[in-house]
Image (cartoon, rainbow, N blue to C red):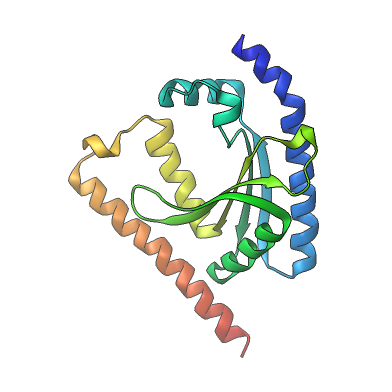
Length: 188
């Protein structure tokens, strides 16, 4: 039954994904903000089912707001605020969460709706923005700790491993900072 509900909503999810990606591409390209990529996806049924089971969700198509997800990966941390401004002008923001992963590296997650959306676009969706360094960090840590069901809070990894990941997180932050310095010095 849940799978048939997912299939029923799939066309609307796909339309939302296409429309949101299209308007974001056009606006980002006109804005002059330097970015690496814009990507989008629709969460597969197995991932939706996994989230329902993990979080005890009873109304998945009302409670899960990341079935449709977009990601903007920019080059420089200084562009994150500008991209946030673009998102605020293109979409109705329901929630704006700076997210910290388990090692403290941040990204931005927005739960949004298309402005003036028709009935087919009623479901909120997620937009993430981050730098290339943040994206690399998130991809690896997501694979290691989320996909592998490693529960960081239950000390399922050794203290030394935790310290090493904290240090590595700091290195990614330093890389982002130095990219900004390099950009500023090259423009002089």
